[in-house]
Length: 270
Image 1 (cartoon, rainbow, N blue to C red):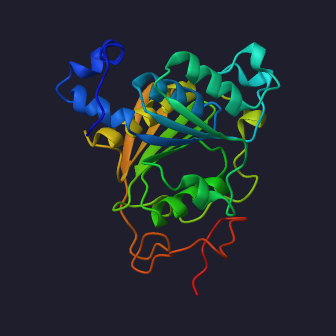
Image 2 (image 1 turned 30 degrees about the horizontal axis):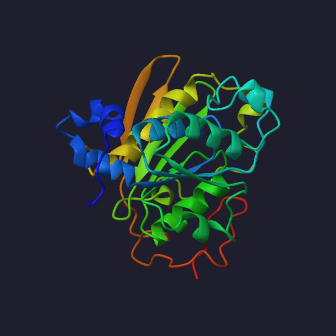
């Protein structure tokens, strides 16, 4: 790698550099990394915060919402003064104030079938902080077609889950072949969510993204981590690749064109 660290960077990242598992070469990997964070809300906020602090050189933020005061109980990159502003703009200001090494690219839009390929390609890691199944399945399918790993996370009231999807491992459809019936899983606006919960899960997602960039450690590949904040328990459940999976199986799709992501998001056999 040609990238060299200046004196300010040596100081900023000194606690990384002194670690045998990271060192200056690992920090260079982070500074050259390109990560897309899908969502600048409860999960996306701590992901953005910690990846920026770690020195991930390029962070792309995709979100179509504006900051609301009810977000501030958990979405920690936004402040009261940001209410009414696009979340991508607020998050970008936060990152720029935190670490000038980080280049931030923003897209104030909702990821969907018509823009997913353009938005996701060119990144080393995708961190999926979305809050709906349609988006999760689109991300899973496009990321697998484009061979991009995904750090997935989801939250509900006091509980959360995380897993990591890589090109040669099982995908999200292996775990959940179909989404629940529309409306059967209420969102946090309906049920509420413990404000600190997405901080825990978002930090796990950021950790997984950093490990992928560093090519170090054992990511949550083929393992779903379940967290219960009320009991303060973690449980890991293993899952395997489904040879009949339409996204990563023996006859995998090579395009999302024509796929209906409404309802259960299933891919019908030809």
